[in-house]
Image (cartoon, rainbow, N blue to C red; front, top):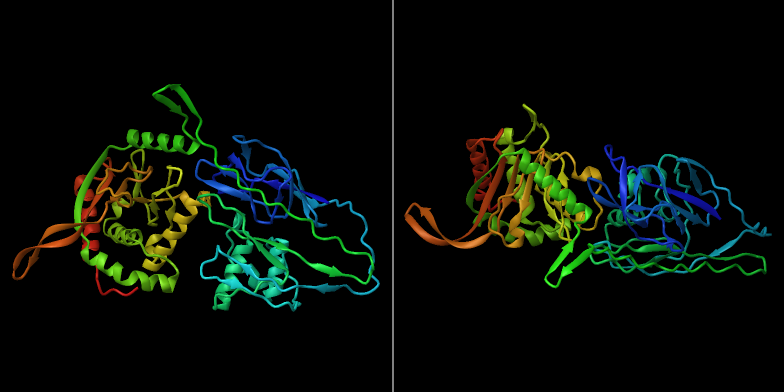
Length: 492
């Protein structure tokens, strides 16, 4: 056996510590490589800490609500593989493994592999997966540059993916690590037929998922080895899946029959402090514009099914609003600034913050970096990716940094308008209201007439220290103009 000391990973340039908010695994639980062990929280975002190795959790070195420094040892995992690194004082050294010597085979081993049928529900477009029982020999993966789990290396070898190709696959694991889901999705896209050929010894186990988390298939490698020795080989140890621990409810204290005191959770305290700070910092002014978006609504109704079939993504109104805002910022760049004392800091990059409501009722604001360099398809993919990762606690600290302008869609809750609070250190925030059918006056060459139109309100709150009514009013009107003059024949 070898013992691997799990470190708290680096989560961003400015993040030095994190608070443990929940242990997802308990001592004695088996952990797959890249499976999450715990939930942590920083002053920027909540995220999960995955294990880079497979093994059994034997010790938790910190408790819930403890503050841990980046790089500290947080847990000890017992692995079965010889040669797993053991980390001591943040330095990796070869693991000391004590095990009974394996019997020496008189002849080469014969590996018997059985065909397996697997299902990957977490990957869109995949159906029942079948694979051949014939093993394939390939050159070994060179993992001196980038860490790969034994499972990832096994899948790559079976699929004929070499070291250079593997190094080029983007990873979503901790510090960009390539997970098995990343590799399987890459293989699916490479094959182009929706069928993923997996190692013949792979079995997929789908654990029970928490209410707001996407189920992640757990791959367990099983092999039956028939040696010339008459001594039977031991069966693989069974692995018991642990059910995710439900998130703790806020502590409530009953004072009387009609009053209950609920303590704020950590994120709600941060939101409260940030909002109070913003109101104390910036004199808020809000301007309103009503926009006729009938052409925009008809265009989306025409293209949404074709877009989803082609891109595998749903196109909502949010990326369309973001595109209009980006164009208006280019027209009025003094909206894309921040204030430092008596200095106005003008930002070159247009980074759009997107307010996102979380299932627990809290709010987080991930950022689409350099949105001015993306087309509508790129903005749509970025919006969907950030929204999904926000709701499943997969955001990284860098995903919520460096925003220069914020959009909040109050219309998603049926609200027609709002007066949002500025997201410091920005100087403006746009609220988009619900799109409603209304009778409206239509100007034509033959005269005015009444018609049913799709109408919505845009409300811009801005910092009156640096944004006057003229600039704020012209900016929100320009956004409305881009939405009203939408080309109904536009191709995407």
